[in-house]
Structures are given as C-alpha cells and as structure tokens.
Length: 299
Image (cartoon, rainbow, N blue to C red; front, side, top):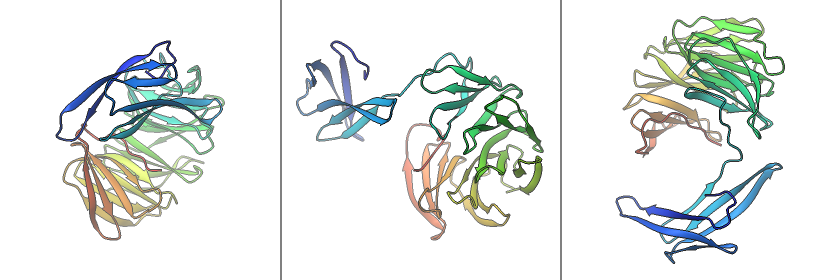
C-alpha cells in the first residue's frame, strides 16, 4: 500500500470504540489520494531519519481519527525457518540480530537482509538476544539454560555463563556491558561478570518462574516480573526496593525512560498497568484487547 504503484487502490476502515466500522475506497489521482468518503483525507509523505533510511508515511485525517502509518525501511526474509523469538538492532542501525525456536542466532544487514554471521552454539529455542552498547558484541540466552557472549566480528563465543537450572527467559546489560543480568524459569536472576563469567549476585524473588526483566536508564535499578503475579524491583547492588502484586500473570515489564519511579507491567490478559514507586500504587491501567503483552519499551 505504501510502495510506488502506477494507480494504487486500497480501502481504509475506521472504527471508534463501541461504534460501527466505516469503510471507504481510496485511489491515487495524480499526486493526490482521493477517498470515496469526503470526510476522510489521505496523504503520503516521504521521510528520512538519515540516509539511506527513508520511508513513506501514510496519513489519515477524519473527524473521528488522526493517524499516521509508517512503512518498513526494509524487509528481511528467508533467514529463519521457524518462529522468531527475539531481535535487536545495533547502535548504528546497520545490523540486526535475531533468534528463533530452532536454536538459530544470526546477525544480518538491515538494508539488504544479507546474512553476516551465523552464531552456532545454542541448543533448542533462543529466547532472547541483545546487542551490547558497542554494537560489536551480542548477548543471548535460551532453553539450554546458558547465557552466551558473541563477537560479531569473528562469530566466536568467548564466554558461556552457566548457573541456571531452567530456560533463560530474558537478559539485561548493565552500562557498557562489563556486567549483565539474566532471569530464568528457575525463579532466579543472576548478575554475571563478563570478564571471567563469574556470578556476582543471585536474587530469588520466591514468586515462581521469571518472565521478563528491565533495566532503568541509569543502570542502578532493575525490575523482574514472575508468574506468581509479582513484579519485584531490585538495586543492581543487591537490596530489594519494592514488591508489586499484579492482578494477572505478568509477561512484560519496562521502566520509564524519563521517570525511574514509574514501572510499566504488561500481562497475559493484554492489560498494561502503570505503577508509581513513590506513590506505592497503580496510577493507570490500559486494556489493549489484543492478547498477551509480549514486549514494551519507552523512549
């Protein structure tokens, strides 16, 4: 719909909450997009974040809604032959690392999708992969209970951290990456020293399997959500800062990028709950109606 076509034709659908859907056809005439519903205005504009990352933006305006849709900068296919569990973009925006249910962990070129590194070493599902801040090192963890550090330049794995007794579900990098965190279905969080692979700290929330972990912007506090309907906030140095009880099983978590006292918790029922550590209470809840919340980020 956002690609260049001689005479693009498509339809739009608008629906307000608890209201009826309205559909209308759109056709390009010259440089304009004409909608059969005169109350809906459609336009396409090209934007560039930086060369060569340019994309088309499809903008809708109507009395009921004002929305902009962005087209992908690129589309990568054929890299994985099973469901993708995790992905991350390097700091330069040129590389993407992705992992899947067959134990595949690969680094690809963002613009053309070419395979640059096939990082072999994990067995079965690789649930999480992340770039270190340098963009030259990758951190990964999965069902084989191990956490691995990879060199993007060579494809070698200089460090493997072992200590979890069940699958590793999420990872966090502390600062520039001298230390990292991993959480697991064994109900523990471990802080690792990358230099020698030693365990620096181990936390046990006593709340069942850990599903996700999030670090604050200053890298001195992290939050972990567990299947026992709890979100626990810790200092990276050890002490527990807060324990938050949730209504449903939490599946995702993030800490506000600007206000470190605000925690976002997503759950299996599609609810995003916002908790203020200073007020010690929830301040907002959003029902998405789109199934389980898998990932959240703030900017």
